[in-house]
Image 1: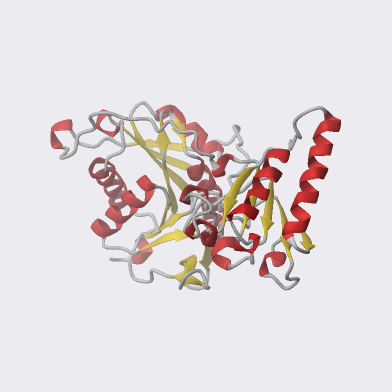
Image 2 (image 1 turned 90 degrees about the horizontal axis):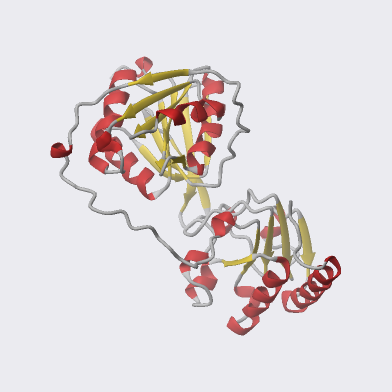
Length: 343
């Protein structure tokens, strides 16, 4: 392998029902920064069926080029068909960096591609950078239970690949005036070649709270004491129209279901306002919420690490402060005659 033959930054573009997934737009923003540092083009890889029109959106969000494989076999994601498409493109055009969203499909595809291309893959990264002196991609992720950040290099193989957690990168503002090159590629595949068949797509219909879409989150830690005290956070959330989340300790104690856990082993969130209540601010939690626009921390320990990332901090007993905040917000809602706006 001649590493010098590999140039360019690629982003795998996930598409569902004709819409590009948010994590792919976020990765185009991150990829743009990497490509500019390396002075190379940024490309999106778009595969599916009836998806050519989405290429202009990929360009609007920062790409210089879009590689498109539009094929009936690609209508629904399957490891086998998408892996063959990505490998064909990678072997032909030789990207030096390839980013995927750390989603179920993204992680599945990236691991299969890395195996077949005999290259490295850093999973669930939260920080990306370039070592310009050695032209190496630096992919960083929490390690050892979140106690340190490990930066992982792939020195001898290309492409350098990583999956990136949703919500940790920022998408660029779309610029519809941007122009770019769209490269359409064909692939020799038929449904008979596929070892797996998509028989039916079952939509997940649920009433579960969706942390990733919440504008305001009230997150509690074990410092709330017990399940009964934790209910105070629901009262606060009701008063301000928020969604309740918790730390890993809270979930392990049975106070909340796992889908409401925020942090390294839970959800990554980026709300407008994040209340961090009675939680210390361990790094494995902070990686899941540090990109919130406003972080309001309440903790009786003035040296709690959460204050290092907080926009505003209140030092005091959450069991005394939370009920007072709740009453103030209820009064505010009554005065305004209804909901509180966070526009």
